[in-house]
Amino acid sequence: MAFTCLADFQAFAKDNLPKPTWEFIEGGADECIIRDENISAYKKIRLHPHVLRDMSVVDTRTTIQGSEISFPVCIAPTGFHCLCWPDGEQSTAKAAEAMNICYVTSTFSTCFFEDIVASAPNGLRWFQLYVQRDRKITKELIQKAETLGYKALVLTVDTPAVGNRLQDNRNRFSLPASISTKSVHVPIEENAESLLPVSNIDPSISWKDIAWLKSITQMPIILKGILTREDAELAISHNVQGILVSNHGGRQLDTVPATIDALTEVVNAVQGRIEVYLDGGIRTGTDVLKALALGARCVFLGRPILWGLTYKGEEGVRQVLNLLKKEFYRSMVFTGCRSVSEISQDLVQFSR
Ligand code: FMN
Image 1: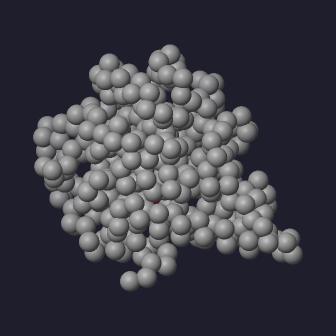
Image 2 (image 1 turned 135 degrees about the vertical axis):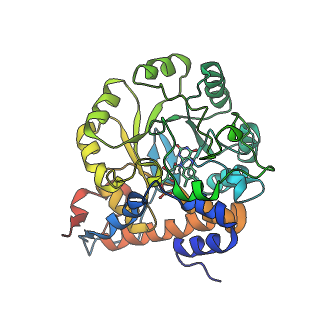
């Protein structure tokens, strides 16, 4: 089968993963309204292209937190890559390194961080943190990541509890015995109703913990899961270096705004003081272009990476990223943008 778009990888993953695993990856919270709207919201935005601009040389590169990436698409943190491919996160890291983009490694990785880094020693990597109830373990995790060359700390702020994922509850989904998280203990056996590894995540984290994190790491801090102007302003006043507009792929609270709809509110509050990123529902090159036009510095992919991994490990993830890179390049050519800095807000119009 020829893979011509990201949806082709999705179809492959659906046909080839065990059904409960597929439903765990694909699932959203409650009625999955916002999981789907993250995707459909892009379809309501029309492009406003410019022609006759000499498109013979087009440069897709940009920077995030000062590091260059080959195009403005990186890998969002997702846990449990060994559900999709035997050496899971190690293959993902290799693909990110080969593509010269950033891989945000999840706290819930199923390979050791040391092995992930050894697989792709020169890759740009950020570390996603779920603050653990045991702050000593949390501190050790952060310091290990920093020692291993992780360049930023992505603090996930939308998970004081796990979303209500109906399919996982119906399937009584749990990790197969052969797969485990390697750096934090996931007491899946304690939670027979929703067998998701949430019980060690500290629900008490609050704004005051940002100062604590700053006291134990030099890494810039990026808050993942901000959706409102108020929280964006608080993020700035707590001196974080970036915001990732995210609703966790619709897996946490249903019926919040689609991320592309929340982006403008956050970008307007931030006023260029720190970088703003977005994840959720990015499936085509024009989605990337639209998010950048509305002020995102770069976007992150969640599920499509897992589809590529399921297809062919490192090679599959590279194919997903290459396809999206070509689509993004084409969208720049057609809208008259020779560089990422030329992607501006006048490129988009909202249809009714
Ligand atoms: N976000 C985290 O911050 N940490 C995680 O460990 C994590 N695990 C995830 C596991 C799966 C299977 C999925 C689908 C998402 C996970 N996320 C996690 C959320 C992603 O980082 C991201 O916000 C979301 O997948 C983006 O939406 P998309 O899948 O539509 O691209």
